[in-house]
Length: 193
Ligand SMILES: [Zn+2]
Image 1 (cartoon, rainbow, N blue to C red):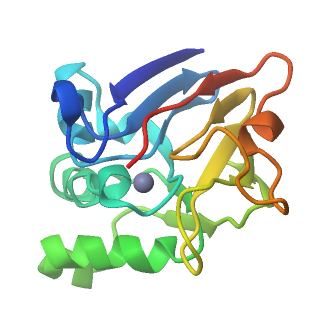
Image 2 (cartoon, rainbow, N blue to C red):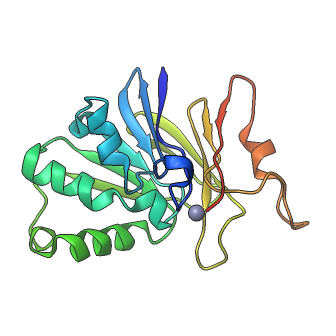
Protein backbone atom coordinates (compact mmCIF):
# COMPACT_ATOMS: atom_id res chain seq x y z
CA UNK A 1 0.00 0.00 0.00
CA UNK A 2 1.18 3.49 -0.80
CA UNK A 3 -0.28 6.80 0.41
CA UNK A 4 0.57 9.95 -1.53
CA UNK A 5 -0.30 13.47 -0.43
CA UNK A 6 -1.65 15.22 -3.52
CA UNK A 7 -2.40 18.15 -1.23
CA UNK A 8 -2.23 18.61 2.52
CA UNK A 9 -2.82 22.33 2.86
CA UNK A 10 -5.68 24.44 4.08
CA UNK A 11 -8.23 26.45 2.09
CA UNK A 12 -5.66 29.22 1.60
CA UNK A 13 -2.93 27.02 0.08
CA UNK A 14 -0.73 28.19 2.95
CA UNK A 15 2.97 27.65 2.43
CA UNK A 16 2.28 26.69 -1.16
CA UNK A 17 0.57 23.42 -0.21
CA UNK A 18 -2.28 22.16 -2.34
CA UNK A 19 -5.88 21.67 -1.31
CA UNK A 20 -6.62 18.41 0.43
CA UNK A 21 -6.39 15.19 -1.53
CA UNK A 22 -4.86 11.83 -0.59
CA UNK A 23 -4.08 9.20 -3.20
CA UNK A 24 -3.98 5.60 -2.01
CA UNK A 25 -2.71 2.69 -4.07
CA UNK A 26 -3.62 -0.69 -2.58
CA UNK A 27 -4.34 -4.24 -3.69
CA UNK A 28 -7.70 -3.22 -5.16
CA UNK A 29 -6.30 -0.33 -7.20
CA UNK A 30 -6.34 3.38 -6.49
CA UNK A 31 -8.67 5.66 -4.60
CA UNK A 32 -8.58 9.21 -3.30
CA UNK A 33 -9.84 10.82 -0.13
CA UNK A 34 -11.04 14.35 -0.87
CA UNK A 35 -10.26 16.06 -4.14
CA UNK A 36 -9.56 19.74 -3.64
CA UNK A 37 -9.12 22.30 -6.39
CA UNK A 38 -5.42 21.54 -6.96
CA UNK A 39 -5.75 17.74 -6.95
CA UNK A 40 -5.96 17.13 -10.70
CA UNK A 41 -2.81 19.18 -11.24
CA UNK A 42 -1.03 17.22 -8.53
CA UNK A 43 -2.07 13.92 -10.09
CA UNK A 44 -0.85 14.97 -13.52
CA UNK A 45 2.45 16.19 -12.13
CA UNK A 46 2.98 12.68 -10.77
CA UNK A 47 2.24 11.26 -14.20
CA UNK A 48 -0.87 9.53 -12.91
CA UNK A 49 -3.99 8.97 -14.96
CA UNK A 50 -7.18 10.01 -13.12
CA UNK A 51 -9.09 7.18 -14.78
CA UNK A 52 -7.05 4.74 -12.68
CA UNK A 53 -8.98 5.99 -9.65
CA UNK A 54 -11.90 3.76 -8.81
CA UNK A 55 -13.29 5.61 -5.82
CA UNK A 56 -13.42 9.12 -4.39
CA UNK A 57 -14.31 9.49 -0.72
CA UNK A 58 -15.16 12.98 0.51
CA UNK A 59 -14.85 13.79 4.20
CA UNK A 60 -16.96 16.94 3.87
CA UNK A 61 -18.22 19.43 1.34
CA UNK A 62 -15.96 22.45 1.89
CA UNK A 63 -14.49 23.82 -1.32
CA UNK A 64 -10.90 22.90 -0.52
CA UNK A 65 -12.02 19.26 -0.33
CA UNK A 66 -14.42 19.07 -3.30
CA UNK A 67 -13.23 21.91 -5.56
CA UNK A 68 -11.40 19.57 -7.92
CA UNK A 69 -14.52 17.54 -8.69
CA UNK A 70 -15.58 19.36 -11.89
CA UNK A 71 -12.05 19.05 -13.25
CA UNK A 72 -11.93 15.36 -12.37
CA UNK A 73 -15.22 14.99 -14.24
CA UNK A 74 -14.32 17.04 -17.29
CA UNK A 75 -11.07 15.08 -17.60
CA UNK A 76 -13.00 11.81 -17.31
CA UNK A 77 -15.66 12.74 -19.86
CA UNK A 78 -13.63 14.57 -22.52
CA UNK A 79 -9.99 13.48 -22.28
CA UNK A 80 -10.04 10.00 -20.77
CA UNK A 81 -13.44 9.08 -22.20
CA UNK A 82 -13.87 7.03 -19.08
CA UNK A 83 -16.12 3.96 -19.22
CA UNK A 84 -15.21 2.26 -15.96
CA UNK A 85 -17.43 2.74 -12.89
CA UNK A 86 -16.61 5.37 -10.32
CA UNK A 87 -17.68 5.04 -6.68
CA UNK A 88 -18.12 8.20 -4.65
CA UNK A 89 -18.92 8.59 -0.98
CA UNK A 90 -19.45 11.57 1.26
CA UNK A 91 -21.74 13.02 3.90
CA UNK A 92 -25.45 13.60 3.31
CA UNK A 93 -25.97 16.02 0.42
CA UNK A 94 -22.89 14.88 -1.48
CA UNK A 95 -24.72 13.80 -4.64
CA UNK A 96 -26.63 17.04 -5.01
CA UNK A 97 -23.62 19.23 -4.18
CA UNK A 98 -21.29 17.49 -6.60
CA UNK A 99 -23.81 17.70 -9.40
CA UNK A 100 -24.36 21.39 -8.70
CA UNK A 101 -20.61 21.99 -8.84
CA UNK A 102 -20.26 20.01 -12.08
CA UNK A 103 -23.23 21.84 -13.58
CA UNK A 104 -21.99 25.27 -12.53
CA UNK A 105 -18.64 24.69 -14.22
CA UNK A 106 -19.65 22.65 -17.30
CA UNK A 107 -23.39 23.04 -17.74
CA UNK A 108 -23.67 21.47 -21.19
CA UNK A 109 -21.77 18.34 -20.17
CA UNK A 110 -23.73 18.11 -16.95
CA UNK A 111 -27.01 17.97 -18.87
CA UNK A 112 -25.91 14.84 -20.72
CA UNK A 113 -25.84 11.30 -19.39
CA UNK A 114 -22.43 10.31 -18.09
CA UNK A 115 -20.54 7.83 -20.26
CA UNK A 116 -19.55 5.82 -17.18
CA UNK A 117 -21.48 4.51 -14.16
CA UNK A 118 -21.29 6.86 -11.17
CA UNK A 119 -22.35 5.38 -7.85
CA UNK A 120 -22.76 7.91 -5.03
CA UNK A 121 -23.17 6.60 -1.50
CA UNK A 122 -23.96 9.14 1.20
CA UNK A 123 -22.69 8.20 4.65
CA UNK A 124 -23.81 9.40 8.05
CA UNK A 125 -21.73 9.04 11.22
CA UNK A 126 -21.87 5.44 12.36
CA UNK A 127 -22.45 4.08 8.86
CA UNK A 128 -20.32 1.30 7.48
CA UNK A 129 -20.27 0.23 3.84
CA UNK A 130 -18.36 -1.96 1.44
CA UNK A 131 -17.33 0.40 -1.34
CA UNK A 132 -15.09 -0.48 -4.27
CA UNK A 133 -13.89 -3.54 -2.36
CA UNK A 134 -12.94 -1.70 0.79
CA UNK A 135 -14.55 -1.36 4.20
CA UNK A 136 -15.48 2.27 4.78
CA UNK A 137 -16.60 3.50 8.19
CA UNK A 138 -17.81 7.03 8.88
CA UNK A 139 -17.32 8.96 12.12
CA UNK A 140 -18.49 12.41 12.96
CA UNK A 141 -15.75 15.04 12.76
CA UNK A 142 -15.99 18.18 14.86
CA UNK A 143 -15.89 20.68 12.07
CA UNK A 144 -19.33 21.68 10.77
CA UNK A 145 -22.66 22.47 12.34
CA UNK A 146 -25.94 20.72 11.43
CA UNK A 147 -27.44 20.28 8.97
CA UNK A 148 -23.95 20.11 7.47
CA UNK A 149 -21.86 17.15 8.53
CA UNK A 150 -18.15 16.51 8.36
CA UNK A 151 -16.79 12.98 8.53
CA UNK A 152 -13.65 11.26 9.58
CA UNK A 153 -13.19 7.99 7.71
CA UNK A 154 -11.70 4.59 8.29
CA UNK A 155 -11.00 2.89 4.99
CA UNK A 156 -9.66 -0.60 5.67
CA UNK A 157 -6.68 0.06 7.93
CA UNK A 158 -6.26 3.74 7.06
CA UNK A 159 -7.82 6.53 9.09
CA UNK A 160 -8.48 9.94 7.60
CA UNK A 161 -9.36 12.60 10.12
CA UNK A 162 -10.62 15.15 7.60
CA UNK A 163 -10.88 18.50 9.33
CA UNK A 164 -11.59 17.79 12.97
CA UNK A 165 -10.58 18.74 16.45
CA UNK A 166 -8.30 16.50 18.44
CA UNK A 167 -10.81 15.97 21.24
CA UNK A 168 -14.53 15.91 21.72
CA UNK A 169 -15.77 19.31 22.78
CA UNK A 170 -19.20 18.08 23.83
CA UNK A 171 -20.04 15.54 26.46
CA UNK A 172 -22.20 13.65 24.00
CA UNK A 173 -19.51 13.18 21.38
CA UNK A 174 -16.65 10.81 21.98
CA UNK A 175 -13.30 11.98 20.68
CA UNK A 176 -13.36 10.93 17.02
CA UNK A 177 -9.63 10.48 16.77
CA UNK A 178 -9.65 7.94 19.58
CA UNK A 179 -12.36 5.95 17.84
CA UNK A 180 -10.54 6.20 14.54
CA UNK A 181 -7.33 4.72 15.85
CA UNK A 182 -6.89 1.02 16.37
CA UNK A 183 -3.93 -1.29 16.03
CA UNK A 184 -2.32 -1.18 12.60
CA UNK A 185 -4.00 2.09 11.75
CA UNK A 186 -2.17 4.74 9.81
CA UNK A 187 -3.79 8.03 10.81
CA UNK A 188 -3.73 10.86 8.29
CA UNK A 189 -4.51 14.23 9.84
CA UNK A 190 -4.40 17.68 8.39
CA UNK A 191 -4.95 21.27 9.43
CA UNK A 192 -8.31 22.94 9.82
CA UNK A 193 -10.22 24.86 7.20
ZN1 LIG B 1 -13.26 22.01 6.08
